[in-house]
Image (tube, rainbow, N blue to C red; front, side):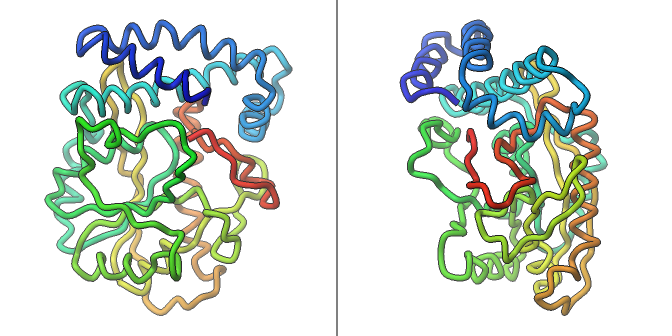
Length: 301
């Protein structure tokens, strides 16, 4: 969202504001910047329209503008929060599970497992809470060199606590992912983005339409016989994020390559996302048309 100069302006405000004033200063400017982009940039309207049109189908142009403003505002806050986290250090935010029992459930798992996440809340801050699992954490993530917004670990203060696996490699990184699961490590995968490979995706009912969701995580779980843990995060306060454990799925072995065999498990994930969106409609940040698989996967972040 915005230009390179705009991003660096907010980074400067964060550095000048310090731990006490960084967030109020950056948020103050954000309200005006978001109003400008939500009002006058057709690209912003185009990227928000697929989701908001399905989430609020009966609302007219004015209400759609309000929804767009709130959605982009929340995205802006997340981008600022993760920049603050990276520039000023992890003590500036607190990421925790909704209740202690959820964390204890994960700690009780005696093997590696797959965490299935989505582009909701701020998954990067949520990742910081995974250090409590006392297991190496790996993340499947396509790193876009053209991306002008920095991830928190790229600011130099807070080093990343996980290893990145690039899906843009031989077999989509499957061999590397199976290896980390074999070593009983944690593998994090985004369950709401297909990285352009429609052969490894499945159309599911989602928000009044058919949307594409990736199937690779369920097939990896079947091969490795590791559980799939569905986690979502949300901004719960000015300096806090919560992580919710939605479901733990045990997938049977030898499912094979057919996408339809993983459909029941993908449906569980999609239903968890719909339940999340009902609670937090302005914290869903998948800014491309999931319901039009022919379109390019253009996104804000």
